[in-house]
Length: 193
Image (cartoon, rainbow, N blue to C red; front, side, top):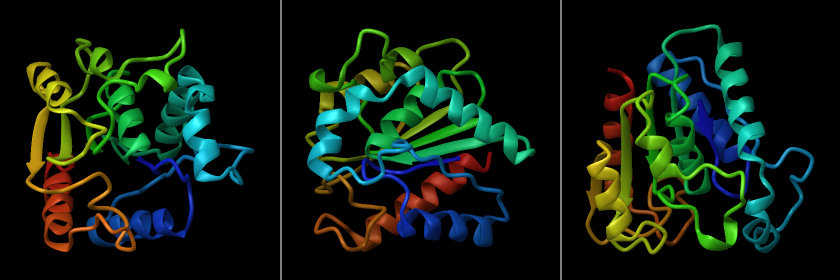
């Protein structure tokens, strides 16, 4: 399973899904976090994350995993998708999870009363083994949150001097080619166990 960043499904994630399928022989499903709202601007998305219903989105992820008709099923995601990967890791459905620079605590302006806190999901007994790929300069993943994830049993891989979004999109200024290749290798090895 692959969860895109805040900008949702687009050719970048089609390419990532195809690359994983081609290189690993995996069946891959990617789920749109903004169904029916794909035309929102990035500013509108940043202001509307709290409108995503966690229970409904997590149910979509489980349904998509079931539709793959393969076992085991791993899950990975980027940025906001990484945050949802951590939430999904606690569902008991997935074999392993890798969140790329996902928020480990929901930012205050994204919280909702019925929302799932990533760290709480990761601490559940049914949570699957999880890896967090983190850049040391990423303001969305502060050191205290990363340490709390480690205390909950998450395997954390840190990249010195890397900022948010350093792996998945080569067009971003934060992209770091060597670190991105290493992070992908770590994620694939972890998901393959």
